[in-house]
Length: 409
Image (cartoon, rainbow, N blue to C red; front, side, top):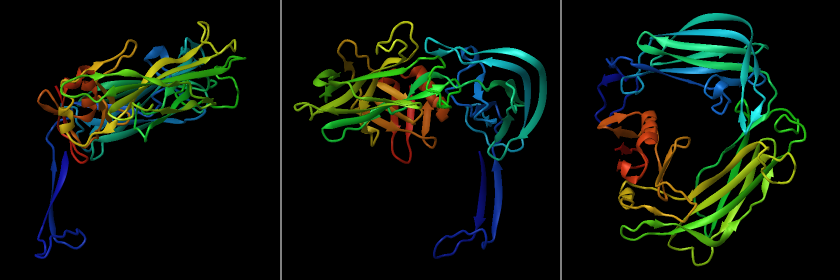
């Protein structure tokens, strides 16, 4: 880190520092740590289709003219390193191509590229600011499609390579992705939630244009069917497990709205009398979104499937302190056939995690630890996916709105 230290003489009736009026001395301290690696992020949509499944991101030339790369120095522990003036070398190799990114097979985009012209190369140098960060803006072509290979490196750190494909192909539906919180709160004797799926094209954006064809094929209609089913779990006593059971008379099929941007359904679950006190809840959502070519409201093997899965929506309470974790130690789930549940789940997009029916929040100012070392927020999320399978893999040493300390065992 870098910090500035000020020294001045304060008034006897209250220490007050105003650098515009006070006589002060100033010293600037800079960390002696060396940079060990680079973090490179770009703002191409995360949901964009990629060449070969894991290659270049496809960017929509009709909507965007640039992609921004955010570069950050990291120390050996993966934490941000504040070091000003470090040169970062950037090479961009460009190739004239044609993109074939409108085919959808089995609900997945299958993009490909064909080389059509010459290769060119440009070199750029950017300097890090006081925070050890730098920005590089990759400009897209004016019209013709292009493949850009961006190589970013510094003397301190290994190089990284990222690829961007610029395409002006028609916008076609390739995915329907859930866009709602997988945890909700109970309101009175009802559980009310809105289920939403965003319809995305091959560029990871909402569909553009006014054509009524969702997939680029004629005579294709999009069909969406949703169901819900309520489950309850009596609040356990002692070290008893959560025994999750289906709630009688609490299932149904909500009405669904489909338009060019998404699929939505408002679900209202009335908690039956006799199950309103002393229980925790979850809702199982069954969803199908598909291109119904023969208009029979049935997902057939020959039709493109965008969603065909079950989701669990938890009805949770907010945690207020680390002592709440102790009451969950030794717990487990006993579930009916066909219902698979996890004791804990991480929701990195909202920086929350769930332990049983309790929801916890975390942010970049909190402290995280693993292997007796403090780790970054990014490393915390990475290790969670690798190590945290149950409640016993997690230790909450301090939890509060202003400061928390969480350890992964």
